[in-house]
Length: 499
Image (cartoon, rainbow, N blue to C red; front, top):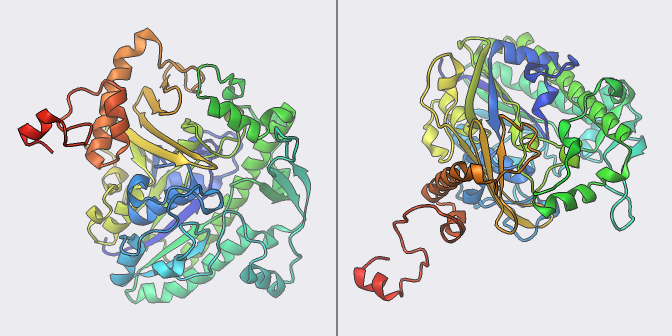
């Protein structure tokens, strides 16, 4: 297949267990389940970092966050760089230079000085982290279709430690589905598809990215989806039993920030039900886009991705949103890919990343995947069979609300999290899949702890992630082939001629 079109479907803050394809019992995601059935489902798909802007910058560049250095969201930035340097490689500019039409409809959130059009994308400029319901193009859409304005009630929020109102978590939207921001985004995407279709038939392929702002909280939905799922049918995550015993204290503080204990457990169950309803609304809107793809006779010429930037707690570990806790709830995410001509129903258990989409997009376009330096093409995994692949994955975090560096190594059974300012974490995911018991200090795990610490050190050092310097002096990482003081002034170092 030469130069296919690419449709990239992306959500924000999306738990993997909301999809039927990943085990959700409600049957509310038939469109995405069909994409999984007809393509490849990745069961160990991870975000490089569970925070919006850094993750999206990694997708755009194919670089891990430590390398591109856009490490925090603008809204909560604590001094980090906010925009990519102008000479940074991006897949969109590479595709544009190679003759692709490039479009992006929806959330951008990859910087403040430059927007999607600056990186070669067509489409409306929609800034911010939440549905910009005051945006002129959305207001024009409502006016054009005679639809009512945005209005909400039934606010769900807790109480902050200082007695103030907590963040808005959910609300009822007094608009029909056709007026929702999700329907607006799907409509604009279909319009762009229709514009690209004629050129695609004449040999100009397209890359079109639809970025929903949801199901990021607050979950603001019309009645049909706010009440779609019966809260009584919702099974609470086992980690609502979290005690934070033996865990970094920041997790307990974050739980207080997100007001979990100030709301009855029935509210948590309702929030999860509304969150699932939000996913169902997005699935329905994705269905409209997929129907347009078929109507325009583009199905057989278009690769389709579905994923998100990171996950969401929805009450797991008595938390909401995301933050300085590297649990599976926010790091493991859905990842689906359907490539024309490849077999249906493929299921892969390799550790892959949102980062790997960048090299895959380049590979599909016939460009060099190595331009995405921290990325690896997923195309070999879209058919059955053995593929040489790493047995683990490394993720990173740099802070949100405040600086908080973390690094994580995830294997089949074990997960290691290094927290320089606090206790480290080690979880046996075969015995404790809900990550309730930190066994880092348990004597019987010393061998696992030491082996994983050395492996994490090696990966970070080889990447050039300077977090490894901290590990050099603090943990047993084995022999090092350099002066860990970096001074160059030690007498023995100076005389040996080592740097």
